[in-house]
Amino acid sequence: MDDDTLQVQEKALTVVLSPSARIWLNRTGAFLGLAGVIFVGIRLRHYAGQIDFRKLEAGDYAALAALASLYGASNLLLALGWQRLLDHLGVPVSRAWAIHAYAISQLAKYVPGNIFQFAGRQAIGVAVGIGNGPLAKSTAYELAVLVVGGALFAPLLLPLVGTPDYLGWISFAATVTIALWLVGRLGGAVFRVAAVFYLGFLTLSGLVFAAAFGLAGGFHDFALYPVVAGAYVLAWLVGLVTPGAPAGLGVREAVLLFLLGGLSLSPVILLAVVIGRTITVLGDLLFFAGGLIAGRFYRAGVPAPPRDSNNA
Image 1 (cartoon, rainbow, N blue to C red):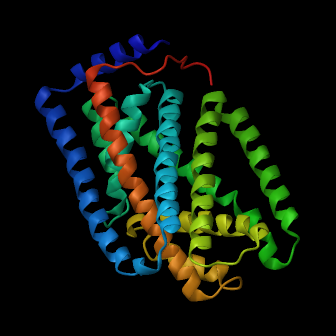
Image 2 (tube, rainbow, N blue to C red; image 1 turned 90 degrees about the vertical axis):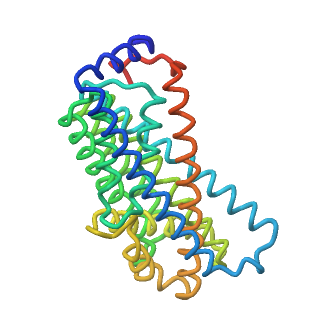
């Protein structure tokens, strides 16, 4: 299916709703996104007060900026995974629109309640005529993929119980390979590509935190950094499924202290958490800005690269 066809389909969907309904739905999604921006600003001010920036050197600032940019870019994988899930559900949308909708709603995860990012995305999708059913199913599929995908990182923690480092890596690779094969068999090629995107995001998130751990003064045994990355992904997963915790606040920190307490001192772990939180919040803001730019392209009718919705 070429992009011209996608544009026609998306515009044709809007006739399902009245103009006033579309306006209010868009305003709802925008309001939730704005609320997220406010909470992000509060969170950044809080984190900044916990880091002694006078001790940071130019290289540290450069590393923070690079990691924030990397994390912001990794959010594109979430948007592309969601786009594939909608495609799997028979609702093909353009890449620019998917990035725009995902980015402007994603900041609402910082609003207490931990559900408003999904509500915002639902409102934005309905505003362009996508049915509530496919949107709700895409959210359910996304959560299922993230939960299962996060659990796949558990083998990386095997060295914490005394097994050789390489056994954790091999077990992780084998588990992921088998899981992706099963997803392809049960859900099809498009669903498997979506799962790959989500796993890519989780992997990059773990690596970003491992780098933050290094900046905080963690150990220099790089063989153990996959353990740190795996611990972060599992802590992120627990925060994701904990009701009421905005962006897993508090839950993630407690899990990391429990998992990594035998590898490093608590002050180092907590400093890594603060640095990691600062990086992810800045990255989310960069992704939000990128989503606004993608929205301009979408409204201007700039086509995304052509793709065939029937193939991965």
